Amino acid sequence: MGFTLEDEEIQTTPGAAARELAGKRVLALVMADIVPDLEGLELVGDHAEAVLIGGCDETLEPNQVFSYMNLARAFDEVQMGASLYCLHKNKWWQTSRGPMLDSGAFVAGLEYATGVDAVVLGKPSPSYFAAALDALAAEPELTWLVTDDVEADVRSAQLFGMKTALVRTGKFRPEALESADTSPDIVVSSLGHFPALLEEDLTGGWAP
Image (cartoon, rainbow, N blue to C red):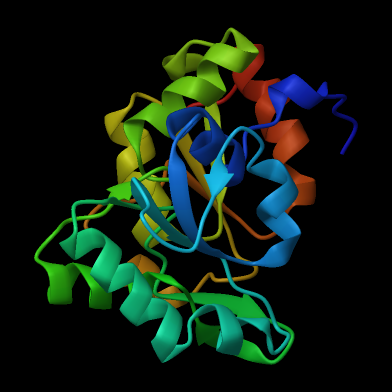
């Protein structure tokens, strides 16, 4: 799309977890691919100070990560005083095979079983948006959130002062847009339409 970014300008949920939980003993029920991004955490199997849940993929790995044994271990750790964190609370995600259950379902199960509300480290956490804006030295009112998830992203971004563009790809569902409590500032058919929209906004030519 023509945008050049430095590594430090890219915000990820594992990065947010690494910052928030730095130096702590963490039981992490996550996909192996994100473990390298959790630098600074002491990943343990018991006597944890925090339990971290999140991520999914299309392999068989979620069957192992979110097994009964592992979820029961996480339950025990929270019962013994560990704090409960999650990368997100997404109910489902879009895959090459269609919609699939996401890790938010396991977060909800642990919340129900333990009576503890998980701290969300990624979207729609205000601290996540704040970190992204800080990395870009950007003002919320001059920043766009581009998303395919009207339910999880749009309202929280607007409450933070950002403009929102909903893309009709990935998780987009017309019925979700129709029933959403908050409407995006604009709906576009493709990410390819966004650079021109951004240019219009920067030059004062775009209006909601």
